[in-house]
Image 1 (cartoon, rainbow, N blue to C red):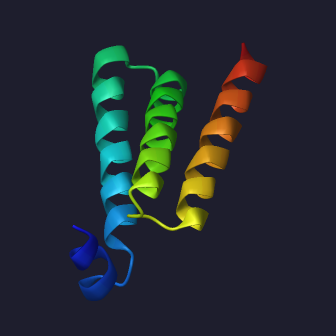
Image 2 (image 1 turned 180 degrees about the horizontal axis):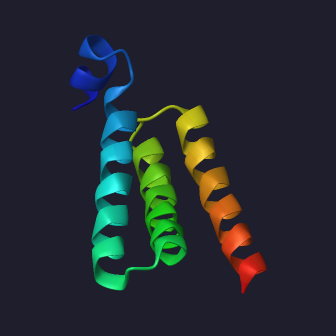
Image 3 (image 1 turned 135 degrees about the horizontal axis):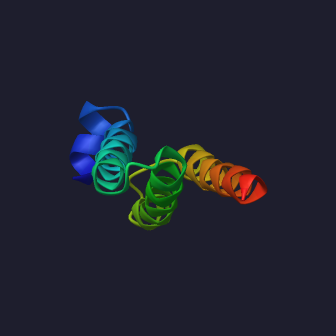
Length: 83
């Protein structure tokens, strides 16, 4: 996996995997709850956790991990403000 990520894709493969997983989680939560803010919050939390794990495996760059963590924090703060 590391060979594909660094040599063939230029370090973007892990980030694309994380984006696809986040979108699939969002669609699954949206289908089960029909609530967009809660679905977005849950999927961004899962994407942030997976971002840390993929960073530990050296599959995504630091910037991608920080973007997903900050995104999860912003979505959570926005949803908590509305409640």
